[in-house]
Amino acid sequence: MKTTTSDFVDVPTRSAQLGCALPTGLTLLPNNFESAQPGEEFLFQGQTATVMKVLKAANITLAKFGSTARSEAFIHNKSHDWALPIIFIGYELMKQNPDLLGFVLSKIQDYALDLFKETVVGRHVKAEVVIETRRGRKYKKISYEGDPSGLKDFAKVVKAAARQ
Amino acid sequence: MIPVPPEIITGFAALLEQVEPLLFLARDRKLQEQAIVATKQFLERVEQMRLAAIGMQNEPEANELLGLSMTLKALASELGVYVLLKADQAEDAWDRLIDAQDQIAAAARASKAIPNLGKKFDHLRSLESALFPPQNFLSAGLIVRRHECSICGTDYQDCDHIVGKPYMGRFCAVILKEVSADHIAFVDAPADRRCRVISFGVPGGTRNKMTWIVTPTEGGGDSDN
Image (tube, rainbow over all chains, first blue to last red; front, side, top):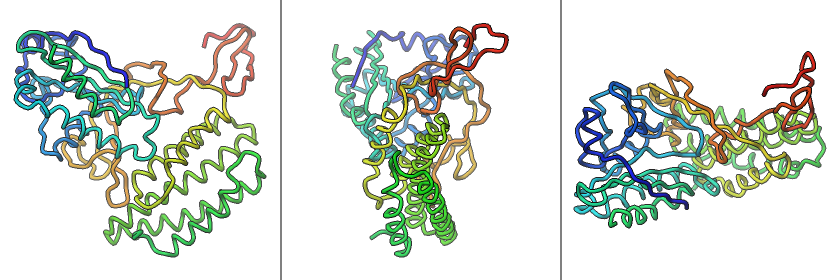
């Protein structure tokens, strides 16, 4: 499992620049959240609809950022066996429901393990989570690359980053 | 209990007895070609039963037969690897090996009863380095504006079907519509291992990365690719 942490753009400020409502619950961000120009379509990861359906089946509703504000398209990069859309979770939600992200990633992990079944060894997945480290303070993106079975533990790495 | 007619289980066991001893490069090519024919004949029977199970709306049987169908395809593909290598068709042999890997992975998704699919997949992966030189893989980045569900034909965002899962004997796949190319990149772990560097330029021509044969450039100059 390889994880990296990097600074992310201030989500409320950027949301306002994009003319979109600030995400409140668990939200999927477009890959071009930081770089999209005015009027430019949002580009979501190709697995976005699948992830939303997997979590809907577990009674978790994910919102898609700006879904009513702009047109959207989907990126299908064939660079990994499986790549998740960027998941954003705000500070208040993390505080109220500290196990939520772990639950979400475990459901996604279950789907990935079911997708690959016995052929899972050597499979390569990519995941990214954007968090608010403290209310209104900083935003970080934590990235994961590795085996699908590491996704559940990735939640612990994200929680640790959120406490900083 | 395996939800598949007993004669299919018996027939599959008999076929494996015939085919498995031939899954080595050193085995006789004619025997391997005969085994491919036998496998495809049995596959035809299984496919007819799968369609019948779909017609009867018997999902457990249809899905199990789907898994068996993919396993049979993988057997034929693996035999094809050895036959093609002996015929000096290494490029096609590589593609056939990746087909076999994909087919075994699909079998694992559909079938609850077929054993040792993980071991078979690992073996097929090991054949990459055992039989072929190292490859440089490429990944295509595509921008897609619409996805169609292969099961119900509606927009994939709107239905409840999930990619990769079997539904009544058929896999859910996403059909990409309104596609444009965004980029190409070199990657270590591509989703499609068929996407690889085929050749590169050398003085006077291009060298095929698989066979190492140099094809002279017309006019005798250096190749740019």
